[in-house]
Amino acid sequence: MNETAHALGTSRTLWELLDRRATLTPDRPVLLQDDRTLTFGELRSRAEQVAAGLYDRGVRPGTVVAWQLPTRIETALLSFALARLGAVQSPVIPFYRDREVGFALRESKAEFFAVPGEWRGFDHTGMARRLGARGVFEAYDALPDGDPAVLPAPPTDGTSVRWIYWTSGTTSDPKGVLHTDRSLIAGGSCLAHALRLTSDDVGSIAFPYAHIGGPDYMVMLLLYGFPAVLFEHFALPAALEGYRKHGVTVAGGSTAFYSMFLAEQRKQPGVPVVPSLRLLAGGGAPKPPELYHAVVREMGVQLTHGYGMTEVPMITMGAPDDSAENLATTEGRPPEGMEIRIVDGEVRLRGEAVCRGYLDPEQSAAAFDADGFFVTGDLGRLTDSGHLVLTGRLKDVIIRKGENISAKEIEDLLHRHPAVRDVAVIGLPDAERGERVCAVVEQPPEAEALTLAAVTSHLRAEGLSVHKLPEQVEIVDALPRNETLRKVLKYKLRERYA
Image 1 (cartoon, rainbow, N blue to C red):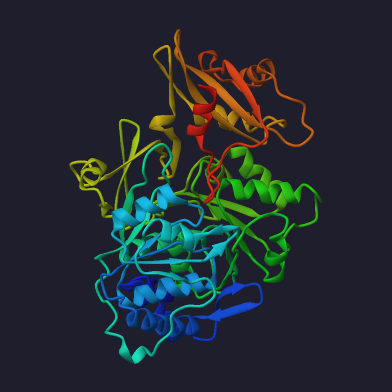
Image 2 (cartoon, one colour):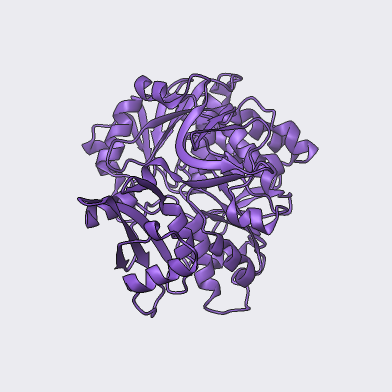
């Protein structure tokens, strides 16, 4: 990390970080969307005007404001305006509906709720009214406006809880994750340091800004002073025009994003899908080693993958100068200040980027061990070089006849089969074995349907132990995924095939 970025990383609050960056490079662009450009200086001045408009509506330091908005320049402006006021923000993923949104509004006790109106065919304002939300206002292309002279002094305490993020609810209610400005700055600093970016880069935010990755990425932009292209709706090949037009050098989001870019590259082998692109980076879901090698070989760009979660936005990250072996098979190394402890195979964490806990005190108490380490539920090990290798989730361990089987190990091997585009391995109830191993496969177009015999033959050739071989194979057109980082929803597969 260069000296300027290091100095900016000591900022106590997100507003202080923006203020210092805007003073350094006021005229440099920070956010690009379609034909619009916002500079660092404009981000600061416009956010203050929006903060004044919110203040006129009754938003004060400590006021809880929920917002469910797409990835737009206006969303970033609203978020920084709330940071200027010292309000408590509760971002909600735009794809959530009545159950999750209603839960978030009730649990956070939100006094205001910003929505996009009707967006992508859904009436968010109508939902907000239906749920009895307080202080509902639309913030899609018009934001509150006022005179910054009315504003109180900006917050100076970066360790107060000012963010409530929500874990994705699957079979249970989401958890409200408590973050501070400093925990978000620490997470973004880790990402920025690992990727070795410069002020000449052009990034991209193709995932929901309401995801924990939103502030992660914004911190990186503020530290290094380069812009990012915003994509309100990400789909390939339609989004490629935006990447090419703005000369994006760094793209990604998660494993599914890498796969989509690779699929586009394969339509015209040898012709760069985005000529300016030099790096794919992301996290949020396991990365098969074969996917890393395919991206580097066929796209001619580097791929660095990391490990993070809503509770700890950035834990480890691969660096572009890591060895190919480490980039393919590990999640990178932790930054200075992130402690990783492996207890009975489980990954535990302590550091400034770790959340303060959950809204529910009982959930918070269960989330930390006696030494203050956050208990992740992920399984892994540290290499001699300090790189972290994830081997699966505790709930993803399949227990067959008393033997523990890692779903991830089987998935990584199946990704090497040319007739497999993506795969999820799950354990299903079995009266004789306790659980049986089932591989659910998504295949490339026009691939010959895989049989159980073909799958087991491939895995035997790869050296997989016989007791880990799947007893069931299912072929699907598309694996079920969430709408944020496109993670596979294994619970839906378990429900379907149990």
